Image 1 (cartoon, rainbow, N blue to C red):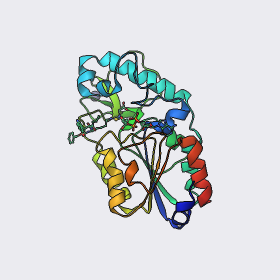
Image 2: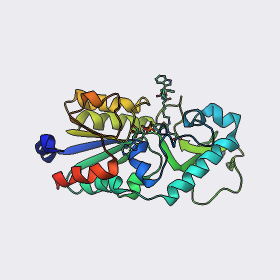
Image 3: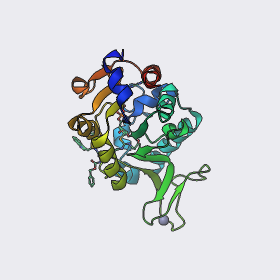
Length: 238
Ligand code: BV8
Ligand code: ZN
C-alpha cells in the first residue's frame, strides 16, 4: 500500500498528523457526523454552541458529562499508539480536533488541542481554570465567584486558542509529511491546515474509510481505518 511513498517517508524529518473524531471511533467514541453522532435527539453541531449553553446549561453539561465518562472509560487504540511510537524515529506533532485526550494517553508528547479538552473547565466570567478531578455534585457546576463553569472547549462561533492555532499553522507550513486521519475536514479553520502543508510541498497522506473534500489532492488516500492503517505506516519508518 505504501510502496509509492516509502522512500519519501523514510527520508522525512518531521511528520505532522491532523486528526479528528474518526481516530477515536475504534476506541468506542462516537464521531460527530457518523450515524452514531446524534446524542439523544440533538445534533452535536447545535449543542456545541454558546447559545445552547445559555439556553439550557444543564442539558449541555449533561452531554459533556456523558461524553467525559465515555472517554474516561475508553482506551487509546493502535492508531493513537502508532503515532506515539513514531516519536522514537521522527519529529512528530499532532494537531487534533478531538477533546478526548487519547493521543496524550497513548504517549504522544507534542499534541495541540485545537478545540480544547473535555477534562478541563473554566469560569464563564472570571479567569478560573482547572482540570476536572471528581464528579460534579450539581449541573451546571458553579465557580467560587458564583458564576457558571463551562467545559474548556471551543464552541462553534468561538475563536480557537490563538497560541495553539498559530503553532498549528507553523507546524503545518514546515512539515515534510502531513497525515490527515479520521476527519471529514468539514470544520474550519482546522480544515485549512492540510492546505498550508500542501502549499509547502509536503507529502500528503489521508487515512479515512470515506472520501473527504481533499482526497483528490492527496499523494496517497487510504480507504481504511486508523487502527488498521497507521501501524503499517509506522512499520515502514521503523
Ligand atoms: C470560528 C469542540 C470564528 C467541542 C468543535 C458556514 C460555512 C463555513 C464555516 C462556517 C459556517 N458557519 C460557521 C462556520 C465556522 C465554523 C464551521 O466550520 N462550521 C461548520 C460546521 C460549517 N467553525 C467555527 O465556528 C470555529 N470557530 O470559526 O470562529 C471566529 C474568529 C474570531 C473570533 C470569533 C469567532 C470553531 C470550530 C470548533 C467547534 N468545536 N469541537 C466539542 O467537541 O464538543 S468541532 C467538532 O466537530 C470536532 O472538534 C471536529 O472539529 C468536528 C467534527 O469533525 P471530525 O472530527 O472530522 O468528525 P466527523 O464526525 O465530522 O468525521 C469523522 C471522520 O472520520 C469521517 O470522515 C469518517 O469517515 C472518518 N472515520 C470514521 N471512522 C474512522 C474514520 N477514519 C479513520 N478510522 C476510523 N475508524
Ligand atoms: Zn469564576
